[in-house]
Length: 476
Ligand SMILES: C[S@@+](CC[C@H](N)C(=O)[O-])C[C@H]1O[C@@H](n2cnc3c(N)ncnc32)[C@H](O)[C@@H]1O
Image 1 (cartoon, rainbow, N blue to C red):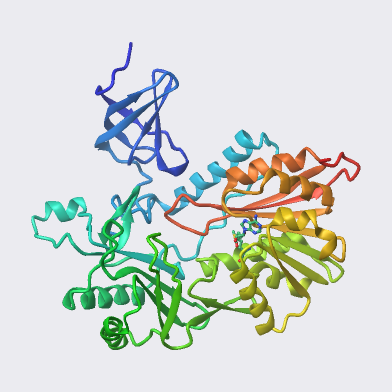
Image 2 (cartoon, helix red, strand yellow):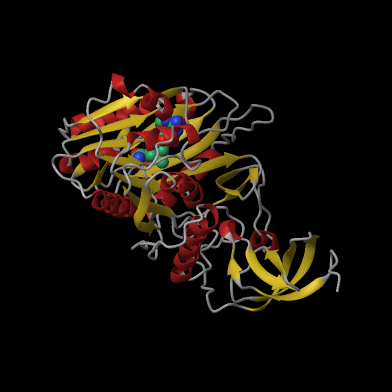
């Protein structure tokens, strides 16, 4: 039977593909269905017919899956933040587990490795230490808001984006990702903006003032930073917002204004004005403390970062004689965290400000056995004689989502470091990179995924590789 576009069919959802498309099967073909959960039976309309697969739009949930749970958040389904909040947490972990296994099997062609279930989060709500909310003059109404029949001012929103719509923002009343204080901050600033008629910035006309609201909160010190990103430096407009915020949320410890006059929609300014407090917060991981400024990178789930780093340290099995090389070291969190178990730790990072933060963090913690080198990993490995005084015995890798450049992989292979611990936020690129390492004498001997972001599709994975065959050919 030939399936036609527009045809309505009944589908039983079998599993989830990464990034959320649900998968059913029909006449030997895979069908990708939006907004469905494995175990659901849905009525769907075929929207795309290809020789290898079909796509279908979910029209009606006929029988819900046993994996469905009642989401806490009223914006689930519209907001891009928590795409899996309506799925039981244990099932979320099992989908993420499957994704790691599939990445290694399909991309890395690596089958015989034991990959345990991801380490789950103790807190699946209010786990983020950083939230970035956007101001917009184009409010997106959720289905519930439209169906309520109420009138809404669509020219103002402060909240989170609709997936794939970078111009449209859902006006978020409360978000379950950060904290109760964070929600009170949202409320206070929204009221100021509306009552004082302060307009959101719009890229179309380059008009308006308010761009982003970034809230950072430290678990260890209980400090809260509010960073309001605006299109201009106007203390006269800022002062009443800040005064009200003080009254509404006295727990806020520092208030900053980043001024971004450029068209690029980024929450980092060319100018930074500290209106109140120190201009930074302090967070703790293990016995170390880290100073986090408005623009510093820091893992956004402190509790899970602690578990991730502790697994990474355990995998390194470090001793006082070890010389560690930490590539893609960011603000030096891993570098410093490993410093008390090794002789010397080198960190290599391309972003100058991150290296500055890393050095400052080492100084604050009285750590003197770390060396930070600023520059591109490939370039620095090419010219390692200039700065690497000892042969590394353990190599740590924590690259961005895109993974490691193939030329940098070759340099890494040529280093012949006996042990590699690879921390990744993208199992697909990790599997690709590790496949290259396994062709040159390395073998994976441990893996551990860690769930840093409940309700999202993201999964972090730590892998340990050992050089089994030091005589295996180098990468040339
Ligand atoms: C996932 S973060 C690692 C963060 C760090 N391990 C930490 O915990 O703070 C990846 C880092 O790699 C840096 N980076 C990306 N490409 C790079 C390159 N080619 N050379 C050096 N650093 C790079 C980024 O600036 C970022 O800080």
